Length: 95
Image (cartoon, rainbow, N blue to C red):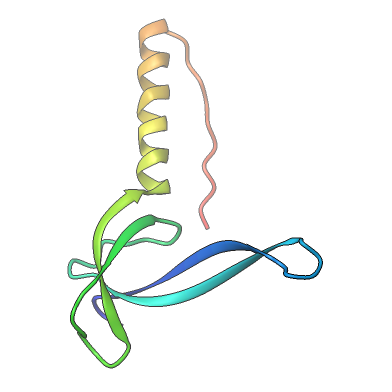
């Protein structure tokens, strides 16, 4: 779906009899105007008037993105290797 992302919100609850922690999760459809969300992003969403039959939340901002963290780590690594004059080889895996 265009301009729509599915966001999973997880929380931990205690089982009322055994006392063990159980993870509960719920999925929400979120309006993403610019289609900028990627898988495994940590986001902040907010309530909004209904955009469609099931979409009642809008993306407020992306808090953490694994892709940008990887790019920053690569840039940091490249900066360290050029400043020390050492050469390093790295392998990348594509999914």
